[in-house]
Length: 344
Ligand code: PEP
Ligand code: MN
Image (cartoon, rainbow, N blue to C red; front, top):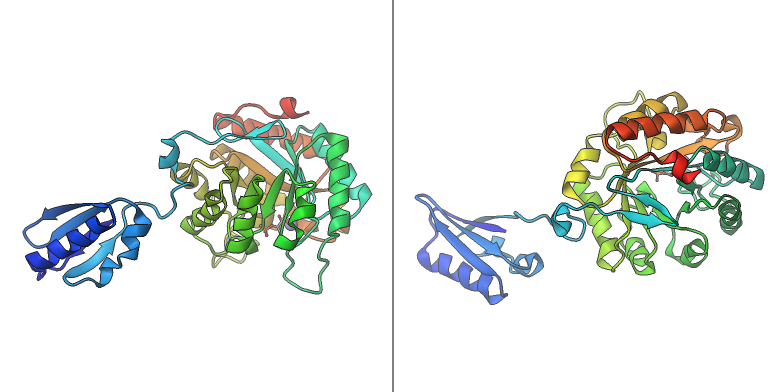
């Protein structure tokens, strides 16, 4: 934190600010320039923030120099990447994970068919929602506990770890019964009690970026999970709202290298929700993988025309294996290890 004094600040005012910084156990480093004095405050950011130095006599402004997130920050690990092992599938560092499955668990046949296809193609994990965040309260809200049972069946048959969304902390227990990774949807990114609950549950989390959230807000949301002692958080870029209306959301691929610079956590990209259209999903996937993403989470359906939710953006099970091969090649460009053979 840097405290910039006013040009009119007196020596007494400077001394008073230094005293207050030192009163909370932090160190004060004054630097007296020709025009103004700047005081560097080094120590616990929360304690220093609580001093409310912005309002102190003689202070012009307070400039934070430390990132507000700590546990999510790259500095915490001194540049080392976090690698998570989820049911034997690794993600992060040089390990790329392809997470695939339907938007929504609709039926036993649809779920198991998709799970078998993506497993055979070498996907690392299976996705599918039993609790769905729908824009309309009249739309299908998911199969709930019956959906979780179908996911458990898919896991038992294929061995693939399951990624599924938790929307309401009251459903935590049943979701923990099957989820290897708990997905936090874009709309819940700032649901802080839910994040803290997942943090306490200790299960890996896949945290989607909110539709209009900054990267700093995403990292602060991750901090809520990490702060509870859960170190397994995967960040997910899934498209943001911009002025562009030609497609559903704008996939912010710049977020991939920037998040990898700011944080040690694995970063995955969801090309399906950004695109909203099947034909855009592959180019966005390849671009994300080549940009250094640690994984892709993509929607796949055996009969997208009949899908209850997100059919137009779902890849067909037919052709998924070839898609997985091309994604693997693009990830290889960014230095990732091959994954399809290891997973199949
Ligand atoms: C989903 O993964 O099906 C979903 C609803 O995603 P998002 O929260 O990113 O909209
Ligand atoms: Mn979806």
